[in-house]
Length: 275
Image (cartoon, rainbow, N blue to C red; front, top):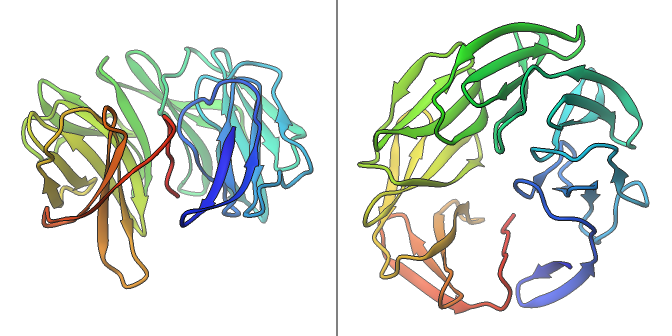
């Protein structure tokens, strides 16, 4: 069951079928975008699917759906193990492209590459750039086998990962760059905050917030180890706040970027998404 909550008030709840795939995000039109093993939901602030119902899928997706705008229209793209499928916002199939490999999770970006609508997808050892309109491969590049996260930046598609405790990025041409942040253990999330793409990375003792252009925004040393989720948000006043969820105590801790604890609050439920 999906709940819509404003402050401490439950506004709506909605039953969704299947298991959620990937991250919960926002569509190009700012609706809540949720991909499950059987359907895609585009949910407005009132808790309703914008088309009156979800978009049914004919193949099980490997990654969450990507929403994008192109030439005045909104589309959805979804990747299964064998193909990339492009749908209209209403769910009608527009095209399919055969994939040379099964995509990894969190590894699918749609972007404009010098005017060419491009899907950049990560496989086990390679990444590929595909022309969506021309349905053809543009190029391939090497990727490390460890987990990577796909991010759309102002400079194109980018993958973020960890190699030998080093936080790295790999661009759509395969160029590898090292980032700051200490000896990295795991990436908790990669988020967009305004025009910045921010990597939330865990080291042995702290959580750091590093932009894809290698600026360390801040770090937190929490008093617990089981960090189920982490997020960074900007308040109406323009201040950045960090939330960490303690998976054992089921408490949400709110910090300032300088590491100061602002508040803590207990929650019921195992999955909390903040948008």
